[in-house]
Image 1 (cartoon, helix red, strand yellow):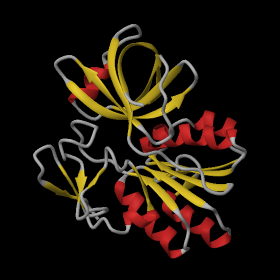
Image 2 (spheres, helix red, strand yellow; image 1 turned 120 degrees about the horizontal axis):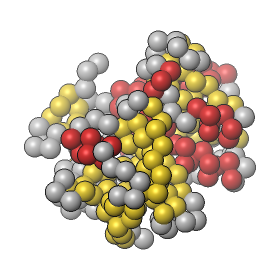
Image 3 (cartoon, helix red, strand yellow; image 1 turned 180 degrees about the vertical axis):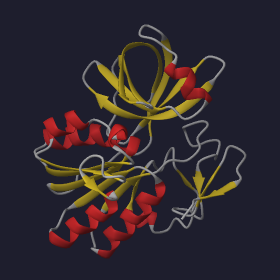
Length: 264
């Protein structure tokens, strides 16, 4: 059940030059893939994925990209934030052999998922990618958790040189997985979706859209042509629904509702 609370920042961890995880003391009844709306007085609210949760604390991992996140990055331990949530759909456990594919800060909700899958004794392979070594997230933690992890960088500064979708295709050519879970840049996700479709493999992907309310009222995050509300019907979306979204991989809408097309 979603609720609103004001919480103090308990810890701040720098994950990369542009990414930090903010930890809070408080109970959050969340599942992997869900998000919260974090609020700052005079700055409004923004949605962020939950990257970790324990019985008495939780964390959100944030990339510095604009005015709101600049303000967040100026906060210190002890400062207060308004947290509302959790909201949205979550990843579902299917079978016992799973493949996680992440790009950049997309690893945040997938780290939470990885920990939950391993608690239930799933066999999990992780493909974690970024543009360069310094942008790879949670490297040490993932290596501690997973028996099989493949790191991928665009420039080859760490792990395999190339793209996570290339590694995904290579793995699906060799072996079967019950499900693929993914989060990251949309063009990466649409390629992952097509590869999963090619190999008849189920997938659940976490999408991002501009959000205002987080509860399905304002319509800012609606996707064409079926009116899917990412904040309520997503952000985690199954393959059969993704196949009906003509907007997926083509464009998104900005704060004014104008279409912004993805570079291909």
